[in-house]
Image 1 (cartoon, rainbow, N blue to C red):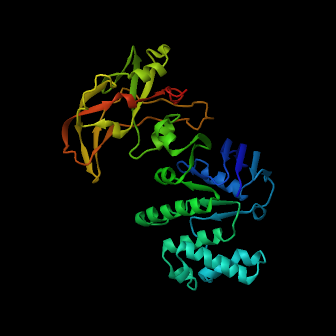
Image 2: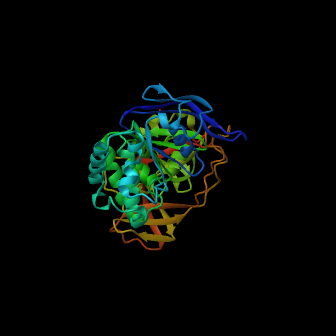
Image 3: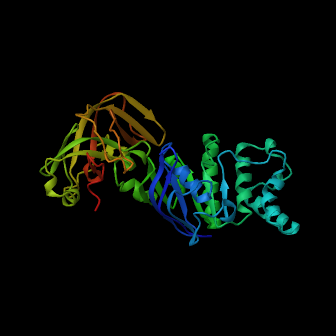
Length: 389
């Protein structure tokens, strides 16, 4: 096991494309780190640099304290699990799992014992003499993981290992990966574009956009305290509701009407922000279709009417979608091009409320209540969260 440290790491291709820009990331010994972001954000390039499959253009990459910028992939003592499984089709499960150990010159008895132990851990014992073509997708992925585990490497690197599986099997394998990583306590870097995977698997999650790290925190912190508009809009399903607002004395004027600010938000928002154009954020679960209990000392609440266009009954939840007429969109966030937020646009033309599964809401006009203590306020120009110190 080992910690992995990226210190001002960048990746520049010969054609001038910057895939990763000045990335600082420290992954602790035994930690499960998730790299998440949309396609082209630089997460797979980052993983490949750690693996030694891509050269580091600038900065320092250390594994276990050792500088590995120029160390070949085979000498880094890491194991990689690919999206495509990358199993040898002519070999049995046992042969696939033991191949790396044979190359290392280990005794046959040691190899067989190690493979048997890992196969038992992964539920593959009865499949050891089968070939990959005789296995399901989930079983093949377990074989790929077993091949990595038997080597007892310093770190596991996983590149979207579940993306080829169906939805039900992804959930099952996600649980298995989390259980295995916890049991083995091996430093793991896991790449995905699925933010649900990121939030349920990782000890810490690195959110990337356009090659720039936006935020590196625990899943709980990312959800509750997003640093900027990109993180706020990317983390969460459904995504955070974002709409225009103007700060006034103790309140915000918005498309939903005048929203009074809770005392805590007023304390954290500087008085000099009066008249400032902002983007207001509210999670769908903080919009309700029932009036809150009367609490004189509680935060101010507002109600508003909206025309519900779509109702999605999901069993435990009900999602109600209603349109809003935005005054204007966010012109640009991070216009210098270095923040990973350049060109970010606020395109939301509807808001979503996540209601209790017992809600009887229907398509048509409805009244909603908004929990003003849960507001997020973002600077319109930079995209930064104004309520974070």
